[in-house]
Length: 246
Image (cartoon, rainbow, N blue to C red; front, side):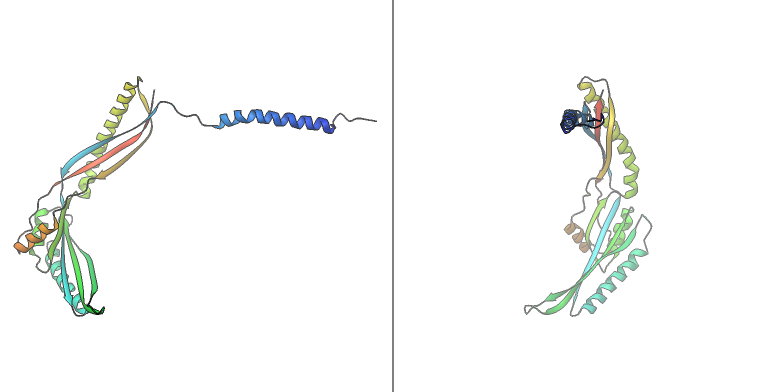
């Protein structure tokens, strides 16, 4: 009987498989541990903000008119005439960025009687005047006779906001760096390394003139400029992120 050295008996093959399985089981925890990423140490998250309060330089005035009639076509025609007359007055004084004119919403809806049937129609049209020339905007708003002021408010113009954001952003970054250095020193480290950072900006909500005050001012003084008083706006930039102390 001959025996080939390259051929294993079933018992030997089972022993070999068992040894291989044991080695794989022993090595699995080590492989899993090696695959886990190293958790960074001494990492601190923090944020800092920069703020700047400036006068509001953009006035927005909304004018509106309401019409009623027996049929929709009549009401729509009345609204058109009112808006056309207001546009003729406003567009004659329009200047880019100083006084800009645009139409607002136009709504037309039925009125119902006690029997549930349509008894008439009512509609409303709006015109918006806005710009940096506060005196011009308020004067034109006061001269329009076919519509009344329904709302008005001041805000910060886009150009002014963009011009201020870089200044406020530099302030926020400097405060972030100072705070990071202070935190590192407080924990007994000599400095820090920046890991990640995000920068976001936001404007504080504008403070509009109360609606009823604006309407009363227009009703009390026809052909007179609408009284205005600008407030202030706050430009804010926040820098947040994490640093590794070293």
